[in-house]
Length: 190
Image 1 (tube, rainbow, N blue to C red):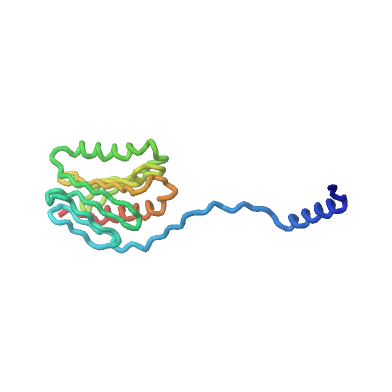
Image 2 (cartoon, rainbow, N blue to C red):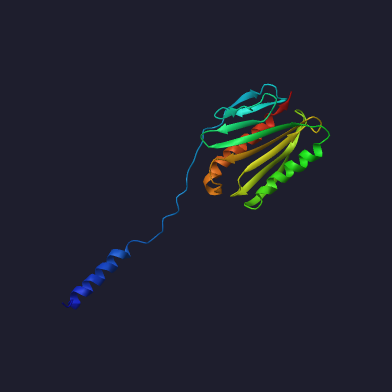
């Protein structure tokens, strides 16, 4: 069977007319749009611990196993993440605690694209420290430490219950970084 030239010409002209009016544009990649409620905070005073701070109302406190321990986990069910807070009293070992706290973010430098440190000072509450923001596929997206340089030393880190895919956890990480800053700003020693 042979196609007649007239039909072939009509088919060709029809294709040109059909494609001529539409310009091809690829669809943009879809982005996950996670939004979270605006944070409201409540005062948290952990029994038998020498510190207190304001915690996000949507988070849950997981108390330490022993009343003598002042280690606290602030769990965020919606973000599936935890801020692990560790307290130690200073006994002529401030340099050791500072060295360990400053090394901790560097453990994530293999996967991190960038680690930014910002100093924090609140002479009114006698709290001084550093906040570390970690960008990239690192296990922890933010870490901090606070001290009064005499008696108290507190560290904290965010960890997610998911593989550290930075693009996927970015909205939750940004939300929790704000909460860490709020904890740092409201923390006071008893």
